Length: 209
Image 1 (cartoon, rainbow, N blue to C red):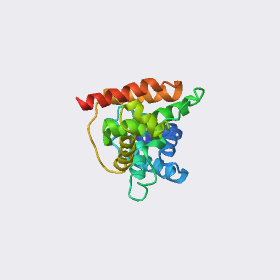
Image 2 (image 1 turned 180 degrees about the vertical axis):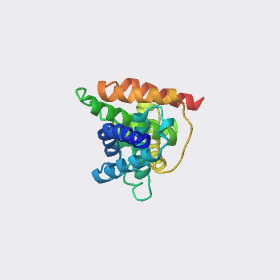
Image 3 (image 1 turned 90 degrees about the horizontal axis):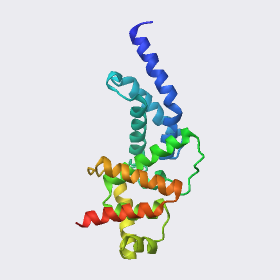
């Protein structure tokens, strides 16, 4: 077997091992089996063409590529009004007994949702959107939690939905990303909504400074 063939065999082996996870990530984002399969196939083609010697962590590379392709799909003109980041936010009281594969997929989904929320929404839009779409807070409770008017809460959620359908990008810090991921996971798995509310309020206060 030539060196090139051996390298391709190794690349295929890495991809096959990661494939179930990649499909899970894609399906959680696009919500369609056929489209998820198409995304995984595209990831394989990109993996095949990639300079794999420059890839430090192949599973992470494949997962990130899958997530980006899935996000690009749901944000395309054809589907941009059909899907929102709420589909990728965690479900409250998620099953702690899920197998490691499912837990990894859930973490990846939350990670991707948080990236999108940080890139495209202001702290006020993000806070109202997470509470409304992620945890189904009534607008009055959102207003009380964030100390804003109920009409403002409703308007901010509407604006957040519109901006999530745009191609907007804003920089964010790894620390902000890590904090929000942890808060969302704690809220969904442990019911720690108070900590999530505290973080969202802190972001609002920082914005006001």
